[in-house]
Image (cartoon, rainbow, N blue to C red; front, side, top):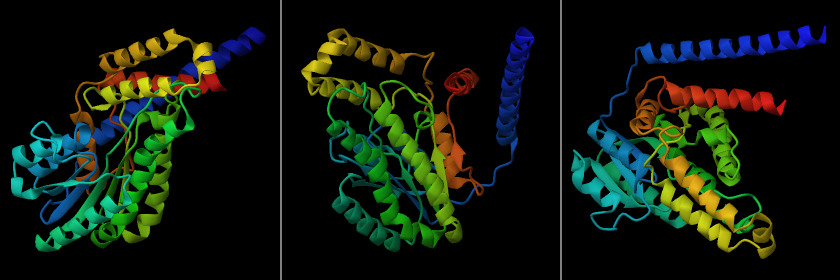
Length: 330
């Protein structure tokens, strides 16, 4: 009787898994073939944070090509021709529609200065601010015991409080336009990975903030979308993440270092590099993400959540990871 009961439970679990996969495929097919109606870019502007490199930089080029006036906010827009901001200003298709400006999302003064500059520019060019894309991000990786609590602060300053700061300051312009807020989160805001506790926490906060803001903005006709990518190569995160491992290890208490051992530090660095560079764990086409960001900005009926993960192999991997993780914790 017990054996029969266990077999039935396993069969039920397998059936549920197959049903979930089937429903997921149907939903994906529906959105893939559903006709899209796009808004016109005429007279509309978009502010994007974190345009020095990665998704923000590529999105700025893509929206410029589609006729939007783009405010590309960079941490260092004057870093020479190798700087992403300088390349944007000189190499975009419509140079008169690309405004590269300095804005550190953790600096209240800089964000307000950018607001004043953008407000004046909108009036001068007879535009409305249609969307704010909170793309700026920062990643660290380490076990919870390593480093100090101060290591969490710059990550949350950018990923959470910087995002909230920019949103709050620019919402009056978005309410006037009945525009869009597009927030960059991550699959790591939904999934839990060891050694990424701080990053997972910050991206989970972005998801909850977006969900709450969406409900608050319904009255004003402002749409809020959350972008939750899987792993992607060449986003500019790897070098900074490796640097963070070194920094955190240096500030770790000697008693903790002794407990973990030097080999743990070296293994974490090797594992992180392997993960970021592995074609089996990350996707190589950043435009999978960019296309969803554009849809969130231009679709007349955007989705609340976008999950640009990659091709079917990557998507299946992530879905199974989520399902198996939930089963394991029960």
